[in-house]
Image 1: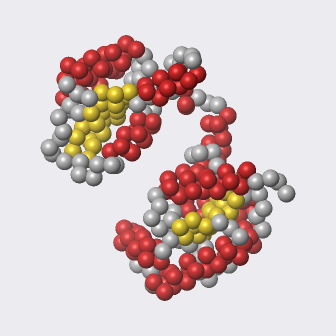
Image 2: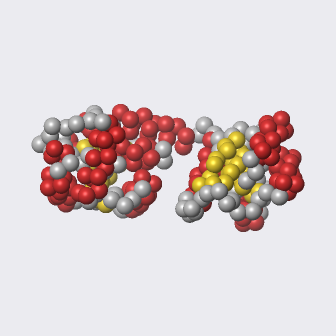
Image 3: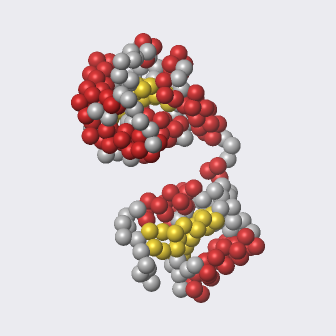
Length: 278
């Protein structure tokens, strides 16, 4: 039955970390602006005793149930309880695994948390995160030649969160702020290995974000150039000129989420890597 209260209970049951479930569930829930999920996340459910506690909470707060379980007995218990309660219940991985099986012609190995094994890709992400933290906000520009991507832009263009998101994808990312009155480090314009990308936004959006930040910090700046529309417009124009001068691609982040900006960066990086080496 559809919720009448403006919210609904959403139970996410996983035998691993639950990251896959949370990502899919939130992407779906975001399409419904008039109702909000109350999330109940149950990671590392791998025994009957653990599942019994989950079933108790589902009984107490009935709602939509999504799961990523691989053990058949746990699946049967969960789905059986949901049928008894008349609740919708669905495996997120089930349809995808069946599609893989039909195409590949073989059964799955049923490895719980297989995407989180300590393989080369895992250590690549950790290495990228370490690099990104060290080279955040213009720090250690002398080491940026080892980056995959370097983001440049004025304050409040989401350089740091985008860098961290990319690092979580195994992409070594540094970022350098463009500060009025402070010359850009000459090493940045001489970079050859990394893909340097400019991030910019409309002056109105930047001013809005900066004002909100100052309010949130309860801060006061004597230099009102930080939120002066004309000054910010010149900052953005300078960043655009700098990118054009160095033939750096640029991305307008005015209406982009961090994920969308990162996707645009990864697309540019993939295109660059496909280009033949001169």
